[in-house]
Length: 310
Image 1: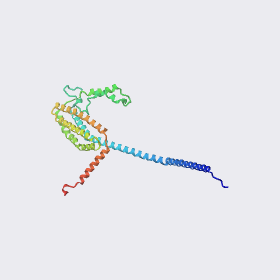
Image 2: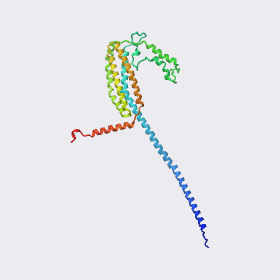
Image 3: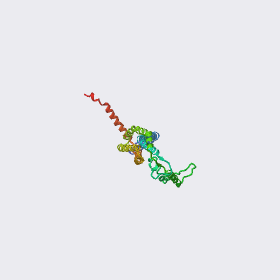
Image 4: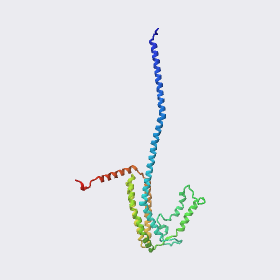
């Protein structure tokens, strides 16, 4: 006997099937989503971590290489600065100091009409400021205690006494000029001094080229250096003027004139060195300059000689 399917029972059955299918679809969707999560956790995260590590490592290595390259360039520039400028100043100061010491009388009773040795030595060799530094030295130490070989700490008053007593011992030393001694010194040292002074001229060109190649504000740095160079050359003339002194008065006047000028020369030298250390070096600027030079060089090489043109 056939059972009669009513509209109501059919609708109920259809609704149940619909709910069952919907439940199955939702279950399958959740399972698929969990599968994706597992795949991402097992494969995706390690890949992302690896890529992040590679990118970070590449950035760190690149940054380190750039820092090292800039450091090496700055070191080379400062070395060029020493060879092309600072060595000139050291050479002149040392020469004048040796000359002054030729006339030194190391005594304990300086005549009233004689110039003290400490007052005539160049800035880099004078000991005229011992009393000044007697009160300053312990401040420079700050919290670092100065100890002797027995680990005993020097007290403030002991340090001051060391400086002052040494200054008192040498304050009677003076200059006793002799024209004959000047000529002997001149004959033995002038030629060597001048040869040493002029033989490093070629290093100047390399230093100026470095300024243009690596520093962004190379125009200002080059201009300042040109002024420094000219001032230094004028100081060199003063050194030669000392060698041509005819008497003690002219000798002392010329040495004092040089010392005053050389002190300023030391100041501008140190100030400029700080700029070379602090100013920004731009590798991109350097590459741009090199590229322009290469283009200009290639253009010049590719040009036809004037005689070959139609």
